[in-house]
Amino acid sequence: MRFRVLTPLVLTALAAAWALTSPLRAQEVSLDVQTAKPIKGVIELFTSQGCSSCPPADALLKTLSDDPSIIALSLPVDYWNYLGWKDTFGSPRNSERQRNYARNRGDGEIFTPQAIVNGVAHVNGGSKAAIQQAIDDTMKMGGPMQVPVRFWQERNTLNFALGGETPGHSPREATIWLGVVQMTGAVQIKEGENAGKTLTYTNIVRELTPIGIWKGMPMKVQLPRAAMMQADVQKLVVLVQEGRSGPIIGATMAGLW
Image (cartoon, rainbow, N blue to C red; front, side, top):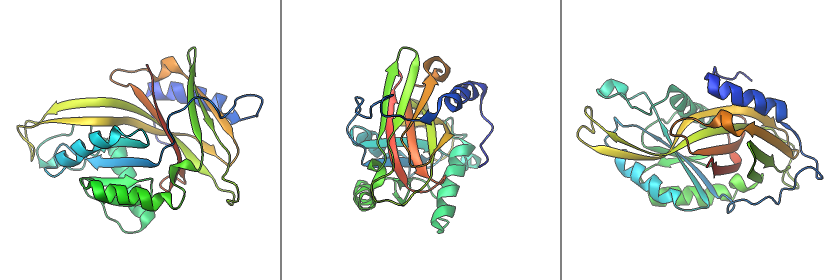
């Protein structure tokens, strides 16, 4: 597996993560650690400040983020920058992730606003009904509740515990993705299709990086809290995803403060 070149800040954190990623022994950490309500839906909204049809989807994502059973993430892309406005949150890595989903599905469909639900279904990100239907459909296959992911802070350490394989399921591997998330951001758009508007974004993914491989056994990941602190970042998200662009089988999001 080939990983991307990362910023020094993230490299520092990931070095510690790899050093402290280990199989989880029952006597070491219990998976009954306090956690949020089980996650039924992980929504990745691929959006752009240069897309005139995206603001309603961005507003809907804010509403969906209020549901504790949903992890709602904004992944701004950069491929609409040529329209006259450079997306201030846009990232080529988000664009690459969207393309990888399309390749994995085999349909090649890439657009904004596009919502990927639980790593499987793709729908119009502005349709609440379509997103809810996608959550219901993907939950029939297990969804992100298959692998429990627990988070807790201990002094200056961030701890993640991942559960084992679902009983009766054949062995599989999954990528553990770590994301740093800015809770909100308002942008005054001066050019392009949304010129003159002030747009607000929710749970903006500033970095999403693979930090390990889950192989069906309970395991623990530890990160130094200080290494993850950066301006505007208030949350971490962990996604357990088959392959690099397959179904999301485990997830959690937690605050750094």
